[in-house]
Amino acid sequence: MTDKLKKYFLYNTSLIIFVGLVMVWSASWIKAKEDMGSSLHFVSKQIIFLFLGSGIAFGISKTKLGFWYKNIYKINMVSISLLALTFTPLGLQIKGSHRWLNFAGFSLQPGEFVKYTVMMSAVYYFSNFNKYNKNDKLIYSLNMIVPLIILLLQPDFGTFSITAILIAFIWFLSDLPRKYFYSAMGISLVSGFGLLVAAPYRVRRLMTFLDPWADPQGSGFQIIQSYLAFANGHIFGKGIGNSNEKLYYLPEAYNDFIFSVLGEELGFIGVIFVVLFYMVFILLGFKLALTVKSKINTQLIAAIIFGIGFQAFLNMGVVLGLLPTKGLNLPFISYGGSSLVANLIALGVMFAALTPKSQIYDSDEVNRTFQYAGTLGN
Image (cartoon, rainbow, N blue to C red; front, side, top):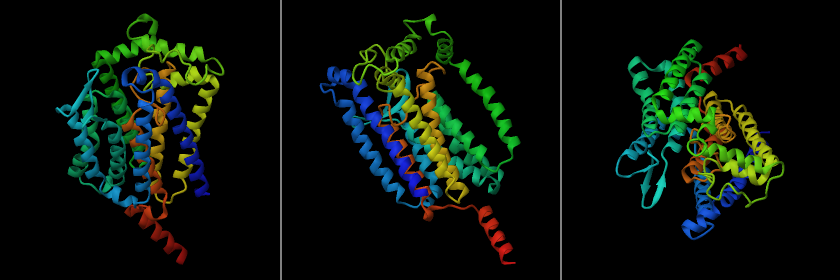
């Protein structure tokens, strides 16, 4: 049963990636031809990143999860260090944000990797929470707190939101008392509102979400163009390559707003199919999480699926005007090497967690197993 689920999951994910490659080419070829001299510039890079990420993911899937799990705090520190380097001369400042590093002409967005290392750190932290003394609880919590602070300073509110929600999701799955969880959620909601109103650009985004036509040539321009893309697509779409909005009308046409181009070219039918692909991705992923015996492995798999699926539906909500703009891409479909490689590596970790030799048990689970075995023996 598990092998069949794995195959169906891989087929479905491959379909999403294939749609992504087609849409990256379609949404970017004009800009690529005029600015880069080749209509295949962006899609070629995306294919290279696909092979790179797939190779790394395959290698990780064949390793024992225990190695990555036991060393996750160290791995997370490396990711956090890369995140902090965005404020050094190695960092690239684009549109006022320090989210990228520049290495020999290649750009890297550390935040895409940090959300997964923080996720695994959270699983480790909450699994061992009751074993830590007060000092350890405070020190090891920095694995989650420090990257969140850096993401706010960049600023990258989209990645900050996904990372914070992943931590909350893992906390919810843990055995910690619910009263602490609900108290923390209440404090987080109040703090989140404070962060929203503290930054003028976030307030503008909220106002744009409520009434984009109040400033149609300014802050509302992007979402209005997204509306037009979906309206032009009708039921069956205008056909691959025939979008008007990608002709410099819709900013980020091959990145954050690629779903709008997809809606214009593939229509309502294409949108429904892509939504279904992501729903199947989540359904099969959660089913796979339930096939493993280890609680820790289950939490890791569920968190990876939840993170990717939640970001996908956040992006769709933004481009459809159902949510304020957050600057999040569409996983496996939007252009972006860091995002694609990070998501594929996360799937590699997921498949490592599915192998019988990689089941991780905490001491409480082991004790319960021995007690159960003793009961059967008596």
